[in-house]
Length: 126
Image (tube, rainbow, N blue to C red; front, top):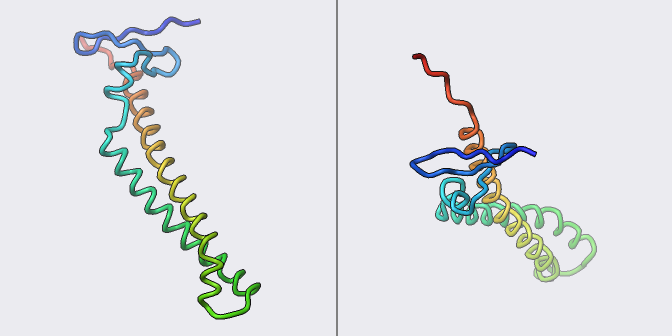
């Protein structure tokens, strides 16, 4: 098994995994490899809004014709019966998108830092 690779950065030694160049200390994990909380929260809010809107649009366009076909009566009865399942579906979509978009941003950031930190430095011309 390969030993962790110590690298000097700013007078401190960072210990990284030799296979993926990931941080092996908690201090490194929370410094440069994570997405800033403002960015993460913004992505979460945007993801929730997009997921909820897309879920509601999809739910109403696909559930309401089925409700109209099966339930006879005025339009408010169709809405009363069809809206709760659509709201539940929309909430699920908002939750999934609100959690997955910040996770993908974190994955992209970590992957970028792993590639940048593990790339060999160009040879010096001396």
